[in-house]
Length: 227
Image (cartoon, rainbow, N blue to C red; front, top):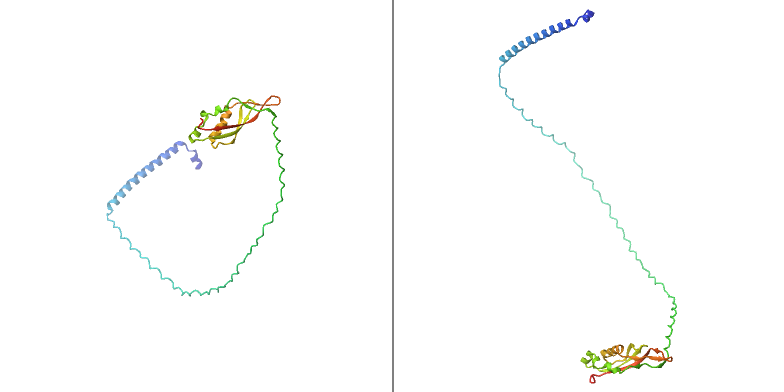
């Protein structure tokens, strides 16, 4: 039988499928119709009524807590006696005696003084002068009224000035040193200033007739009444 089914043609299979599909459609239509009628009947026979919401249940009151268990009476803590206070004797302070050590004696060793520097050589002796320097002209003309210092005129100063003049080989005064003051600085300074700028000399000469430097004493008397 199974072998015969396997050899059946495709047309038979299609016919079987069509018949089965028709049976399914007929069964579905039948069942749908019956079901519609049954449901309609049940709806007509159904009674309507209002649904009342039941009241809420009463609130549950929690039971009171159980009483605490009886505690046994507590015995008071034992009395502890503090230890006796032991007084410690404080030792006396230690006295430190400071010993003053004298400073060491220092004996300085004398240091020999350095030898004195040798004395500078003596300046050469001035050449022997065979002829002294001589004034040119009358030097009194240079110390007249025009040369009197104004400050000395206002003060009414008078006096005699003595100076040592150094005369060069050209006959000009190269240096002037006041050896005796008149008591007025203006008169002293004016005497040296005029001697250097205006007084001229014939220079001194040595034994060979050569001019040499020399000194010359000069005295000037300053008087207002003669000016």
